[in-house]
Structure formats: structure tokens, C-alpha cells
Amino acid sequence: QKFQNGVITVGEFFTLLQVHVPIQKPRHSHLPANCAVSAPPTPEDLIYSQYVYRPKLRIYEEDCRALSQMIDELKLYANVQDQLLVNVNRSLWEVMRTCSDEELKSFGAELNKMKSYFTKESKILAHNEKVTLYSKLLQSAQEQHGKLQSRIEKLDELLKEAESCLVALETEQVRAFFAALFSHSFFPFLLELESLKAQEEELQRVGVLHLMWLVYLCRELSDLETQNEQMLAEMNQLKEKEKSCQELLERYNFTEWDITEWSEQQAVFNFLYDSIELTVVFGPPIDGDAFGEDPSRKIVSLNFESLLDEEKAPPSSCLVQRLIFQFIESQGCWQEKCPTLYYLPQVLHDVSLVVSRCKILGEEIEFLERWGGKFHLLKTDISDTKVKLLFSASTAFAKFELTLSLSANYPSASLPFTVQNQIGNIGEEEISAVLSNVPVGYHYLRRIVSLIHQNLLQDPR
Image (cartoon, rainbow, N blue to C red; front, side):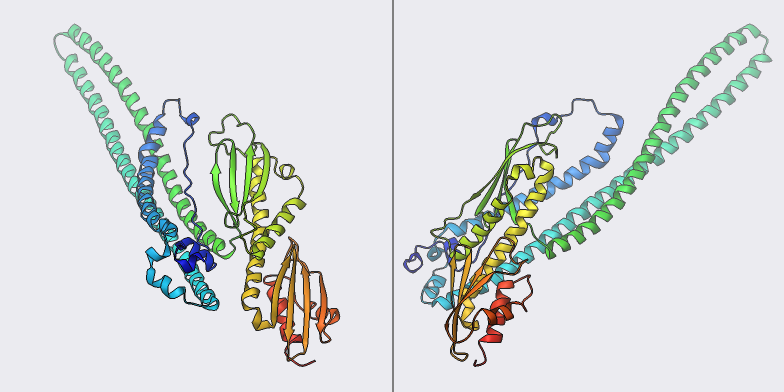
């Protein structure tokens, strides 16, 4: 009704077409107050800061400024979802309000294809930006390596100059000794010799200290050069590893959670388009844990809460919610399964697997509701955790209702079923023979419907 009256927003229009455009909330990292360093920096710390940390920090700050500018620009487009469709694109609204339900569904399917394409494009852009960032870091490391190499060469020159000074000093002392020996005043010579010896000892002491300091700096620079080469090699390895991990993530993406809050007291995670909320309450912080992420930190409680409005949500979404919470309740006390932060990633992974499978089940049911006519599926009905499929085919002179009982472990196990025959001779025996040929796995429900249509509803019986 809002769509016909022209008071529907862009976001509501997407929801009407079953096009979900989730916008992640920004997550900022805050430096804790107790992480300040009180000890004075050592010479090694200063060299690291000058040649390693500060150049990297400058590059990361430039990248953060560019990302912040990009986010500010994208916020303008994100706010468009809250505006009226009539104000944003009146011509589109005028055309779409005259379309039939089938045309709207077809338009929504095309929008979903476009959304999938742009999602992949955004991942490619993000990967390219990471490549650019790592290239800048590599270039900076190479420049700092060159500066360190130049400093080592200067120190080598200083060492050679100090050695030449010592040789010249020894030569001068020998010359002064023989000059005084053959002079007529031998006692002044002795006084001068004592003075020269004292000066020699002082110069040697200063020269030895200088040499010791130069040797120490040379060793430190040599160690830094070795570490720099190791860092360059590690960066290349990390780039290769990041590339392979990115490919694996794109192929097997089972992460179904988004973090919306992480504080000293608790963390909040959302699943399935923000329809399920997990609140993790932490115990007291551990001494020395600056960021509150010590794996041994205790977890006081884990609470799952449904945020789905079941009165407005479609039946398939309600079924998915019931199956997910069936799994959650079957696990018993979650606090016993996850007593510390060490076990939290495994809990998120286990729940994500169930959410992923149930979400695919919901998409299968929506597909059958929309395109079930192609398989002689007259009606799809949902009751609690059961799906009722009413088949009817005049060519096969058959009409029957198949009821499948679903559970949270779908699609890894065969589904219990019952058959209510209304017209024809198709019963449990015929359905059982068909289902025995359908292996469990991805799109299990769709393959069941397709094989029933292929084996039982095409040829006359």
C-alpha cells in the first residue's frame, strides 16, 4: 500500500523486492589508558622508531585518511535508503507501480544479480587497495634499508680515519723522542716526554672508547640490516599467504556474524541480517591485558536473543529462526562450552555453520514459493518446523501432500516425511523410492522436489 501511495522509502522498496543491502557499522579501535610506556627508550628502541615504526606509521596514517574520506563520501549514498523512492527516482516509481507481482519478482532477481556483482567488485577493490598499501610499506622498508646502509658506510670511514690518526700520533711521538735525545737539554726532554706520555694515554683512552662505541653501532646496524632483510622476506611471504587466504575466504565463506560492540564489559555479535543477537559478558580484566583480549579471560554469560518481528516476517524467515534456536537450545549451557575467550571463536564458527545452512534452506523455500509451478508444486506451507508441499499434475493424474520434518542439522541427514494422497496412486512407497536416490547435501530440498517432478509427475500413471 505504501508502494502504491508513493510513501515507500528506497530501503523499504528493496525489502519489498527481497533485495537485502546490509550496511556494516564502523568499528573503531581505542587505545586503553593503561598501555603507556613508562620506561625510557633504549638506543635500540630509538633506531627501531626512526627506521621501522615511524615510516610504517606515516603510511598507515595516509591510508586511514584515504579510507575515512571514502567512508564520508559513501555515507551520502547510504542515507539515500531513508529517502522516499518518489523523490529519488520518480520515473522508476511510476513504471514499477504498474508492474505485476511476477514482473516485480523478476526485477528483484535482476537487482540481486547486480548486488552480487558489485559485492564481488568491492572485494576486488579492497584487495587491490591492500596490495597498494603493502607495496608502499615494501618501498618504505627498502628506502630505510638504503639509509642504514649509507650510515654503515659513513661509520666505516670514521673507523679508518681514527686508525690513521693513531698511526700519525705514534709517528709523531717517535720523532719527538729522537729529537730530544740528541738535544743539549736532556731534562726538559724528560719533562716533555712525560707530558707526551700523559697525552698519549689520554688520547688512547678516548680513542678506545670511541672505537668501542663505533664497533657497538656497527654491530647494531648489522643486526638491523639482517632484521630488515628478514622483514622484507616475511612481507613477501605474508603477501603470498594473504593472497591464498583471500582465495580460500571467497571460496569457503562461513562467517555469518558481525561484531557491533566490544567493550571492557561485553561484546555483542549479530547474525542473519541482524535478526539474532549474541551478547557475551566478560569477567574481571586480567592484569597486564591492555586490550582485554587475553584468551584466559573468563566469560560470565552468553545470551542469544531473537530480534525478528515474526508478525511481519515471511514464514520462511520464521522457520529459519526456529531451527537456529533449536540448535542453540540443544547445546545446553553455552557458558560451560565457552568458559574463556579462548573458546569464543569456535562458538562463533559453530553457530555460523548452522546459520549458513539454515539461511540456504530459507532461500530454497523462497525459491519453491516463487517457482514451484515449474515442478507441479501447487502450494508450499510451513507449520512450526515442518514444510508441507502440495503437488498436483493432471498429466500424471496425481495430487498429494508431502510433509517434511526439518531440524537444525539440515541438510546433513535424511528428512522424515509423511504422504497424504488425495488423487491417484502415489503414496509413501513411491515417495520413499524417490527420496532414497537423493543424496543429502547442498540444496537438498530443491533436489527432492525436482526428482519427484521428474520421476512421478511427468508420465501418466
